[in-house]
Amino acid sequence: MINNSIKVNYTVHDTHVGDVLYNILSRYDPIACDFETATIYTQKAKEIAKTRKKYLKNNWEAIRECDFIINANGLSNVHVVRPTHLSVAWSEKDAVVFILTKSYGSIHILCDLLVDTKVKQIWHNASYDFSFIYYFTHKYPPNFEDTKLLVKCLTSNVKTYKYPVGLKELEGNYYGKWAIAKEDFTQDNSYNNDLLKYSATDACATYHLYQRILEELNSESNRLITSKKTV
Image (cartoon, rainbow, N blue to C red; front, side, top):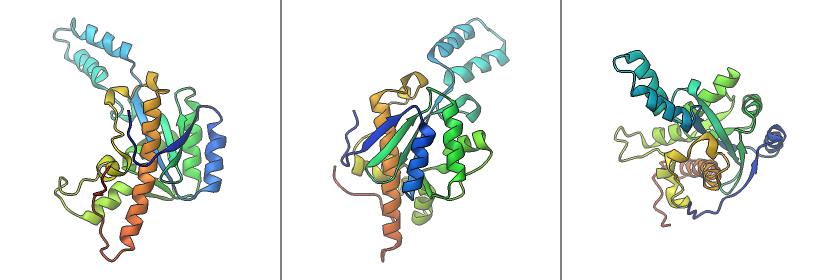
């Protein structure tokens, strides 16, 4: 279970997603966003690939194809991965989670809105999330900040173990331990309560991190340090 220090309030939508996001974009600026993703290969497809691989012997091309299916996950090539959720936060504790697996047309609708709005969007590691937005729209959001890059620029240290830039490393003490097992990120698991809460927390934590960055930029020290707050 996810143990939050900051309590996250969120709603879940799997229909009329365009109307909900449009309403948010008309009311809040900035917003923080995050995708959750999963491979298109089901567990059954992976099991079939494992079985097939046993009988391939020296057919190396077919073996590589089976290995690709077996090892595919939510961080694989965009062509074999689909967003399962989009979470959008407008404060450190308020968010909405869109479930995208009920209708994959929802992905196109939400991505179209994200590339057409002038509202500032906050993403953590935007290069990953934007690969999906570009895949579906051939455009990028026009007004955004990437908190991962901002932290990296502010700390400016090649030794990443001294200055971690992962969202959970930077925000974990504020939201508790909210990470979940990578095995939970499947299309069949889209309505899982822990996964939904995880998704909402990611967006809220990104929003909160951005506010911390702005505070540091306006402070005399002008540098960001990882939170020391006790859970």
